[in-house]
Amino acid sequence: MSGRHSNLLGVFLTAFAVVTATLTSQAWAQQHVDRVQREVVQSMLNSLASDLRQYYYDPKFHGVDLEAKILEAKERIAQAPTYDDAAIAVAALFEALNDSHTFYVSPGHYAKLEYGWRYQMIGNRCFVTQVKPRSDAESKGVKPGDQVLTLEGFEPSRDGLRRMQYAINNLTLLRSLSVNLLDPARKVHKVEIVAKQQGAKEITDGEDMTGGEQWRRRLDFENEMHLLRVRYREFGDDLLIVKLPEFVQAQLEVHELLSKAKKHKSLILDLRGSPGGSEETLQYMLGGLLDKEVKIADRIARKNTKPLLTKGDHRDGFTGNLIVLVDSESASASELLARTVQLQKRGTVMGDLTSGATMEAEFYRHHTGGNRDYYYGAEITVADLVLPDGKRLEGVGVTPDVLVAPTADDMANQRDPVLSRAAGLVGVGLSPQEAGKLFSFEWPSR
Image 1 (cartoon, rainbow, N blue to C red):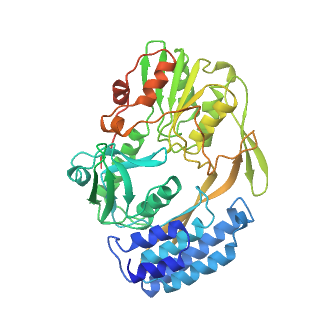
Image 2 (image 1 turned 60 degrees about the vertical axis):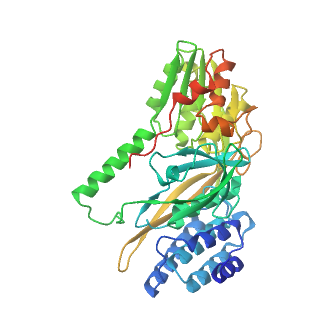
Image 3 (image 1 turned 180 degrees about the vertical axis):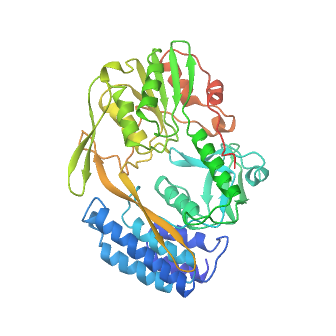
């Protein structure tokens, strides 16, 4: 480890800081921070610190001495050799709160990077789940079902992987990712996955965009909406399987979905990979699955506590068999729905332990200028959520009623034993191979 890394290890005491200190040295473009940039970052820190003081739900900040942390961040920025080091100092302030929904959103990078693979925690191990065709990852022999032993020298864990992904996706632009993999045949191999750079120009909200750039952004938005659409499969009147990638549906859309479900004896709601989304969508979804108004949680904000209740006409909902599927990437609204189903004894939750990220947050956006415009902000938790049983899901997650997960061999062969088993519980024959083909993974078109 270089001397610079050793110094940073002494400065940054959290696991997050250790990760980002190592990653920074491999960033796409490491430039010495000049006086103007340093002043800009200090200005960002001042605005974001003010947001934390004013909006964070807990005025005691979980016992963290916020003012001391702010002073530490200012000193680190003053000594930072590069812009990325300065940005890490700001991010570390937010990380000190150890809150899944409170984090710094840095100004946009000049390029978007695509590494051509997806990975996630399955149980307590990390596995490759998808590899993009014709990507560098595919050319290097990376395959679904490979276990990720180390990523940039760090062994993935449930909590550590979140920090790693945040650093890679938000704070640095890495030319490549160094990965040690264990394939299903138990052979270890090391690969260097080179990133594909997408787009060389940063566009900020304050700039005039050309017609071509406006068209590109429109296509990007349409592609994102396509990926967030609800998908479903029907098996006569016996079963409806719904794949819900995110909670973004309006009340009418939720009503139409539940009306379709009412035509079937059973409903499997697949929330695997769903990071949550709209609180209102959650309220209407649960309102259509339960036969009475139910308190989902107590919403504990800085100034008051209010119940978060289900919404909708409970007399016109789906009353058949219900199974909810979750995994390590199911978060927020997905977790609240699954846990409410358990507490109300409404159905069965199957799959893997969920993310444990269930706070309620709002985004606070800022702009600062100089030789160029910087648009940045922060996601800040404005309310904690405590369930009717007096417990919290933050940092804990939902433990399924039936723990079941794909094996490395299942992933390598695109089998879905979780969905297959769920269908079997309601009397529908669906092999793991057939289940794996129902909702094929879709890569963004750009």
